[in-house]
Length: 292
Image (cartoon, rainbow, N blue to C red):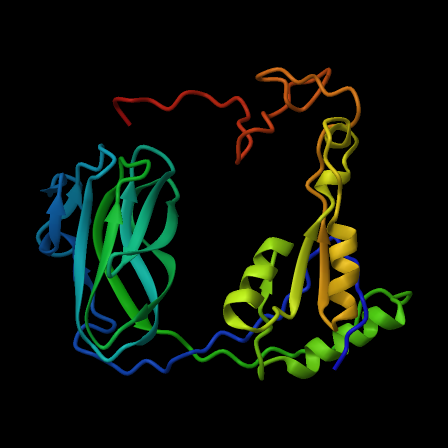
């Protein structure tokens, strides 16, 4: 099916429904697993703050690599909800989570001097033993225990294919109908630049369905410095081949760029983040190197 060109500032992607693997009760499902029974690295077991379960809690999160690893034994596998029992007597803090050695992201512990339970997201357990690691990040919190419970099955998403813009073009409506008809059945592959699209075709023998292009080299300050934008031509060619086109514009400074270190964004009357870094470096208060 040939889909007409859709020029959008937001990439058109097909989001597949997340597969929910039914969780079967294992030996530790729903049971609090005490942090003090885990493997400690740079941390210590304490018991001076009352209200903990078991024989104590894990403290001493004050260095970047400080962590505790708790084993979830004999799991049948599947998607589970993770709950952490913690205390944060020194204010709101952040910890980093890992499952079986792979990063899960961060969790924020709201300020609370007493031990309390906090939902910490979902974890996809494998059959057998699994490990959950809590690593310092900001630090200065107390970990009492963790618990995993089977996640409830989620109903299927309702994908109607309707657009919110009543003035949407026929091309946009056609693309949306195609995405809705494909939803849950197929996955559309894509690449963000022509060089990557060419590499896939050359090495795999197939062309990605979605071609992503960037108007950055059309920015006046880049043109002043010799760039020649080609992505509009690439986008039109991808459309002629029956592909889906997405467009972004990594906006550069307009004409009059002040091309000096620290002033890459051009002249401004208010402080701006440096364009040469990501994420932008806004001025922030220094983080304490000692204490909490």
